Image (cartoon, rainbow, N blue to C red; front, side, top):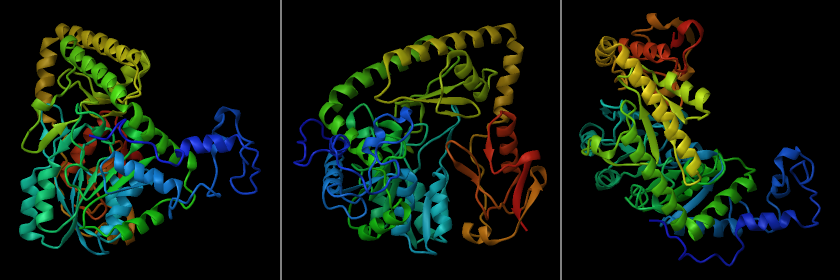
Length: 495
């Protein structure tokens, strides 16, 4: 677990408090930014007063020596990490920097296929040769399971020059891989493990949640503080551990992939959030997890058709744990699509979900939630579930037909595709538009994916197959937005 109230405040004033205090001084800013801490939209309130640049007493994120160094040391101590750095360009920058800092251009990398698009962008930018491990699909809910450790082990039989492994854990839906087992295998071969734990920054604040990858031995762990903690959008952390990585090179890559003008408001948000949780996290997370478990229990008890996955329904051989902060609400076999369900929750109940998929929606919970919010969600689910029950009772034959249709169209699993050229090489080639239905056997020129979560069904340089085309058609027919598919259902291919 993260340390809580037993951590003493640094001698230095926390960054957010110092920014607030500075905003009240009469120091006149003959420096950027141009609003001069006074002129801006009134809706932004006092934020402009704290929006400064690297002035005296406020340090430099790229060469921290004072208050930012202390803030990052505080974060490292809180997370039990050897070294921690602030990120203001999101976990995307952390993934890019980690891969660039570990892999040499033209090298080989092993990645879970359900990695974020930032991983693919790093592969492209550094001319890497990727090898993919495809996570199995949970057939009951249509969500990705974790990565089998034995699949990682098998890769070394034919690919002995891998320079890094990248795993997404937890997934967008909350599934956690066996990071300890994967790290044991990788470290035996002296290969570092990068874990995209963007959705797991909250793990160490309560035993209710899974064990963090930091505690599981991962060499680099990237977390989005803004996703599940009370911090502002774009904020993230990168944790560096062990002797298998070149930390100085990763630090340099962070200066490349992050802005040279990092927002002090964002950095103050990270530091203020972590200080708050250090002092009050135990109390806040106790109340939050009790509310959350009460909600999960009520959904199970009061909904017949809308289903909520639990860890016991996952494959323990590849899924080590499950993050119960994720409320995955499945409408499989109800005659309702995920998109229709999403529209009902938004327009009838004014509830905005995090993500919509073909057969489920995802509600993200966090310590900032209110009891009233959970009550509204439960009310909406119970009413919608009753409407589904009424609809199916009126036409049982239709339900039987829907059951059969679901069996025929279980497209949640990403089709395995072959790479014909590297992503970098594909991006250098001439491209033309092609009708999706005519694209079988052609080489993709774009990433094609649903966003969120941004997992490509094909990347540039991979062959488009009939299975890929069928999956894309199924996504489109359910009203989902597919990036990389243009008007009239065209895709770009390599000439």
